[in-house]
Length: 396
Image (tube, rainbow, N blue to C red; front, side, top):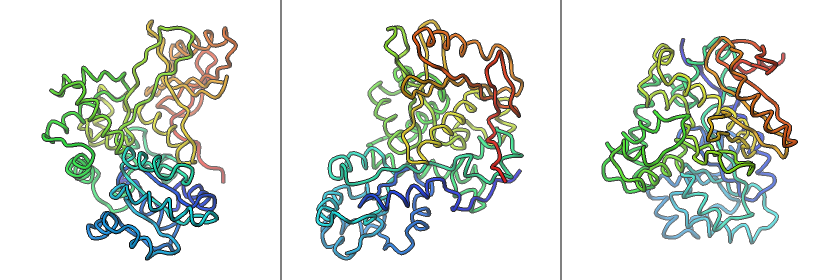
């Protein structure tokens, strides 16, 4: 099955991006390289001048004479990859403070979350909206393709728009992406002397997707110190390659697990790092269940972020082994989700959910239970709704 072509007009974040530009003088859009930030901003703001700080001469001027650079754009502009010149944000602060009624004056994009957000928090606090654009969600993929593809095809394909729209073989594009990322972003964010060791570290992280993060063991397997593993993981998070899901601790007991779980923002990249090139490779792979859990987890994260909201998903695990794959916490109401890659719903899949529900109900906390499985349709297991991973087709 060939990968789908994805028109940029399907990006869920587009209305929210336009809305924020009517509310704030500055809108900051962050996300991984090649997630579609530049294309989305060109579509949303076609009349705005464009300043690419990837260009060496433009970046030099931004660093050496920022006032002169900004003065050439009296009505504002789009500043692409603004983390290349973080000091520029201090001058943007002065600019928008002179024009308190301005809206949508500067649109900033960036690929390094850590560097950019540090600069934003120092210079633009209260002056900018923050939005995240991640690789394509399932809602943004062509639905005719999605409704016939298996979850394994969707997982291996991932959501980076470029290979889908340019006809580049996925394994070729992802290989080039990793090589470019290692050579460029890693050197920008952290001095890594041995890129081969770093690449091995990244692949080891892929092998731990969906697992509790043990930095000491991860570092030992990669042949690096614990503190180095911690710093290198921060690079993966800062450049939107991986993220950690935090455990929920209700302060009901001191026996809950405190370590986070590790996931990748794109399952196509995750599969490539695991050596999986097609759905057949994934079907019999020992990490099949972990890839499925990663896919479901990141879809829920995207559902919030692409609507301009902060995700409110956690996981739960206690020292006795009771585990909830995903837990949404909204006040006193909780949604507990069990994720299973199997296509045939089993009664025992509901065991952990029902135990957790009993524990929460005893403390007067409401819990909704769900199972997301790798099969088709909706059924139930011991009274718990079990629904397919596949999004319901849009009405009409």
